[in-house]
Length: 510
Image 1 (tube, helix red, strand yellow):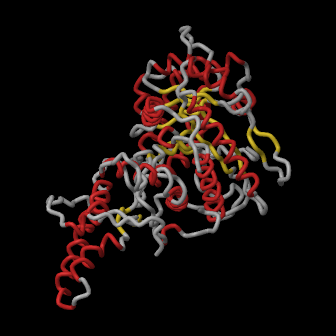
Image 2 (cartoon, one colour; image 1 turned 90 degrees about the vertical axis):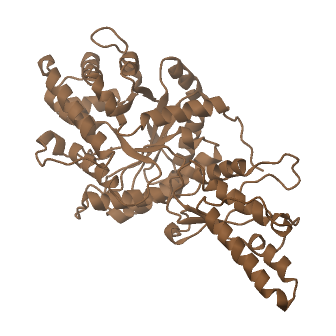
């Protein structure tokens, strides 16, 4: 028997879901400004800027002190520990600067990768020790979400089953700890673009990794409505000789997500993975123009792909502050448009925005094609002997919530079994599900036996003379369930005894 300890309170869940929705509100994404000191050294080196604490503070100040209009494009900012406690030129703590713009403050909480024994150079991520205490402190210091990055790679032997399982479990433990402390966890399983693999190989690996991640999140009772996913886009390896256009990248990426990511997840904010600023924007835009059904927001959580042009314009010179800010806001606006599928490139992108930012080394189990399957589950109902009775709206909410947390959007339809419910009860519950305001990426329909046949059998009684009455009863019930599958059934209140009689049989065997 599964148990859920410790459980989040209703208030905690509401807070987490609200934060997540704020971050990925329409047209908004995330500025990943959580680069470590070492990473900033590499960035600064390209523009001949010395890697000092003051220069790091100055560059972040340029990004954070832009006009308040940036809040139309940026919903959240991820901080590095050092940056969280730095101040603007006016002496205001950076988190307060960001919050005053209506933007949510986040924090990187992992402590980097470490080698994973028994693998071909694969890694896990450190930082679980003391994480709960750090999260509690970060919450007090103004943070409302966190980020943790795990890294996987593609080669002839990678990603291995061991690396996938280990990193999925680490991400789930991190996410659970964050939620207990009031932080929305951004789950980041990054598959590196290093290598010469093609688009299909990356899609396959991405599906395997994400399927394992969401299985682990379920095992750890993580509240998906209060999480965000930060995955790689599905792209070919950086050394692959074949080049793919944005539409091909978009189709491979969204297909992988539809097969793995539950509809309960509010948003997916992609990392840029070494793509140029323009490339990352074009790929995101193409995803949001696809005709495929997408139950989650598709947005961005870019670091280099939001900052490269700004850094190139700044060059460490105070006189270039305005030019750097303009470059940053321009890029933020472009990605905001891309997150809505509304970006129309002018064809005049400058060198900084088109330069590759790649730096080297920076259900899946049985391969079932989900688009060619259907699911036939039970509805979520109380036990037949439970003294408390639940109405169709309660059954509907519990059932659809469970499905949104588990069933990928690639599944075309869910056809419920009736499970001993009366004909009328099964129809009313199905009807209530299809009237819910919750987003449902699959068709919700029926696959009933007893709950389609009981009235017909009662009318027939084994008598040939009753054939027409039995057929009428069957067609009537089929029509009622057809209406229920569209949320259009309006019961007359005159259901007969056969249709309202419970069909429950203890330990029923077909």
